[in-house]
Image (cartoon, rainbow, N blue to C red; front, side, top):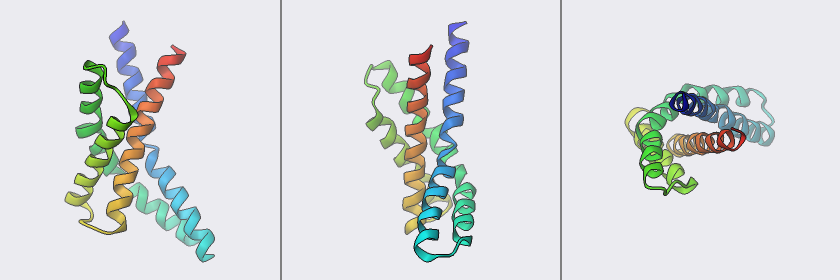
Length: 130
């Protein structure tokens, strides 16, 4: 019963982490749309961020969740550890699949770190309410 509830909370936290491409796309797109005066750039950057959402998913699966389990076992769970794991995963998978350098590389790494932060934030929020 308790394991089922924990699995449900972790699954919900992973789902929240997948909002990071939307957040990054809206923030960057909004910024550049305001600066340049072209509204179509908002949509273009949002679609680019959503198209690179697989980077966040892979980073969550191969870096953030294992880091969460290891840090939880050793009672060392912290935002810095999860954010670092997310950023490393985002950088690695961005390098392998999308871009080896440039702004897309940096944005994907930040997007994966934000996904890790959203993951841990939603887990902690759910644990306090339960």
